Amino acid sequence: MANEGDVRIDLRGDGRVILYKRDNLKDPVWQVRVRVPNSTGYKRITTKTSDQREAERFALNYYEELYIHVKTGGSIKSKTFKQVFAEWEKYVATMGHTRKGGSWEVDL
Image 1 (cartoon, rainbow, N blue to C red):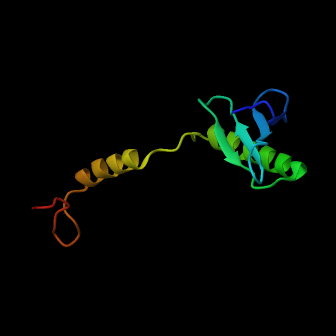
Image 2 (image 1 turned 90 degrees about the vertical axis):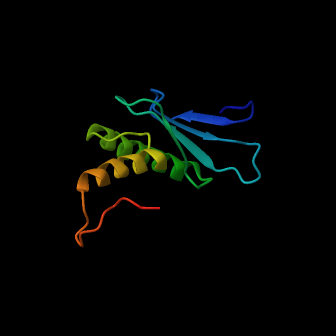
């Protein structure tokens, strides 16, 4: 993540919200890496701005949103399409017949 010329700022002082800017890009914008307690991994996202104050505000707001999301039972990691499809497939198998008396199973 960090090269020799990159700028890194720890916004909270505890390593949970790291704002960084890659200097080797044509039009560098601030990026943020967020870690939330009671979750595994971290989330990286662009702030889409080169203004440091605006990026700091965005990063801290994003941290608060993720913190509340995890606190209410959510997760930082998104499910893949394959995982969601497998869950849907399992759900559909328990539904049985459709309203018009058809079946979810395909006869080929």
